[in-house]
Structure formats: structure tokens, C-alpha cells
Image 1 (cartoon, rainbow, N blue to C red):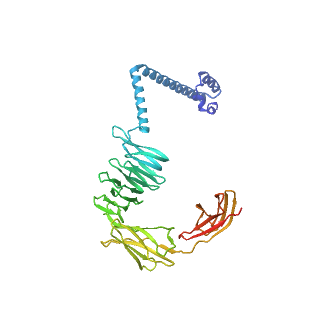
Image 2 (spheres, rainbow, N blue to C red):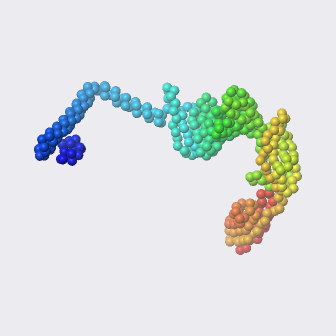
Image 3 (cartoon, rainbow, N blue to C red):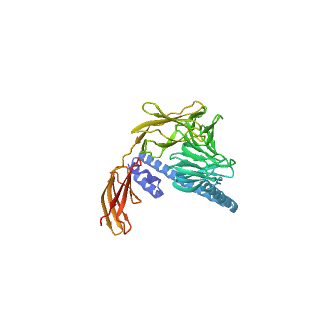
Length: 433
């Protein structure tokens, strides 16, 4: 049937006219009387729907024109002013606002959230993408996510270094920061006592300090550890309990838990140290350590637990000493004991090895051409090489080569190899022309 085969889009299109209706009606006359009546009824209903839709559009257009005609010039100006104010508010939120006073300067690669404040008291943050910042100004309330180690320098010279992955926020009311996650090491120069204290806040408490060097770490479970490397800090937990923590001590904080002050594992430093092994060419090995003032540094053999030596720290918690004579090698551990009976956990084992044998050194080539010289040779792996006073870096296999200038009358060069223990081998090499 012709009516059923015609798509609906054809009937509802603007090109559907009375002529098209008449043509369809003419075709329908070939049908039976009942079919003709049905087709004509459908055509008339569609024509009526289209006409009604056209009348509705015309009425809407007329209403819009009348509404525009009723608007006076002041009303139009007010509408434009409202649109302009809305646009200005959006721009103010994106790049505007009032910055708080300068707090510190940042160096390092980090993501920064700049705190902005409106005169009404509304605050928001503007994110700065990852970038390597140099002397970037930080203000009260700014947030920092460290990608590499970043250093914060305050106006009075105090410094704090945040480790990679650490997240912190500058405090609003004083010099300091809130450590949200990660680790911060702070160095506060000694002052006359009238300067403000540096404050580090955490979820479990706060640390305030002046003229000290200390570290604060917030773990993934939000527990907090503070380590004092120099001076003293004041620690307050979230319940208001206060403790003074001195060099050689550490404090553990957890929300809702009491303060717990413990002795640190001693920090022992040797002149020659490689990972967990110390090599020396003297049986008497010097060292230094930082522990609690007037505490005892205990040195014991790691395998047998036998006490090897004991040292008493001075009033600053410093131990400068020399280990008893060692032959061959020995594995030691270090711990400390306070006069009040507290004791620290032992350190990781450290091997002390005595090596008095000079390193192997062989010069395989030494040529001179005018003021230029070429020297090549081999030494033991890990040794350092000098040709006259110029340092040469050997390869991983101990082979080295040097090309440089010498005085025109020089007949030889001095090649020196020094191993990790300090033993040296020296060769005076004659130059071939």
C-alpha cells in the first residue's frame, strides 16, 4: 500500500505540502471505500499535527520578540554586568585570590598546591604541575609533594629537606610545616634564643625545636617517629603529653597512644667505609659516634656476643675513639646504654678488615711526543690511580690510560695506585720517545 511504504520523515518534512496530500489522496481513490476513508483520515491527522507544530513555533518566536522589546537599555546593561561579574569570579578562582605572607623558598622537583584566600575568608588551592623549582616562594598554607629531595629554606636560614614522595603543608600561624606523609630532615641553626621555634605537625602530635638537627617520619599507618641528631626537641602528642627528646634518643607517636621515648641505634662513622665493610691498613681503626650525652657506647662481636670495647660519650653525646687492635677481620655491632638503665637495639653488623698489602700496579705503556704523554697500565680492582698529580679513573677491570701534558724536559712520570685501605704503590716510569 502506498501509505505504508512512505517513510515517516517524508510526512514530517517541511516539503510536505497540500499538493503532496492531494496527490496521495488521488492515488488512494483506487482502493476500496473503507481503505480510502482510513488513508484520508490519516493524511488529515498528519496535516493537522504539522500545522499545530508550526503555529507553536510561531507563537514562541513572537513571545521572544515581545520579551526583548520590553527590555529597556538599563535592563540590558544590567544583564551584561551580571555576565561580566560571573566571568570575573571564575577568573578570580582560577588565577586570583590573595596569597598569604611569604613563608619559605623551595628548591627541587615537586608538585605545588598554592593556597589562595578571598577577602570573604573563602580559601582554595591552585595546582602547579610537576616542575623543577629554583628558589620558588612558598606561602602559608601551600602544599608540596616532593618528587625528588626538595629543600625548604626559611627566611631566618633554617632548612628542612623533604624526601621523595613526602607530602607537606606550610603552617598558617608560624614558621613550620605539617608533615602529612613521608620524611623530613630539619637543620635549625643556633640562635640567640629569641627567634621563633620551628614547628612540625603530624596526625599524632607536633615537634618544636630550636638550634637542633632532627628527622621526622610519618609511616603509612600514620605512626610517627622522630630522631634527634643534634640538640633537643620538644614533642607533644595529640593528648597533650610533653617530652623532651635529646640527641641519641628517638620518640614514637601514634594517635591516641602515650609518648614512647627510646634510645637510638648508635650512628657510627668510619673514615673508610664501603656499605657494611670497613677496610684499614692500621690495626687501630678510628671512628666517631653520636649517642645520648654521658651514655655508654658498647661494642660487641656480632657472632659470639662477647663485649669488645666500651666508650663514654661527652656532654654533647659525641664519641671519638679508636678500636682495640684488630688482626685479620672481625664483625662488630654497636649499641648504647643510658645511665638511667635504658638500652638501645644493636646496629647492623659491620665487618672490620685489616689490609696491609700494597695494591698491584703495572705500567704497560708510556710514550712521549713533545709535551704530550700517553700512559697505560693496570691495577687491582677498586684502587685509585694518579699520574703525577692528575687522578685517573680505572675501568671496572682495573685497566687505565692517561693522555696529557708534561714539561718539555720531563724524562719520567710518577704513577701511584692507592687501595681502599690506604696502601699505596708508586712507580717512577721513564718515558719513551
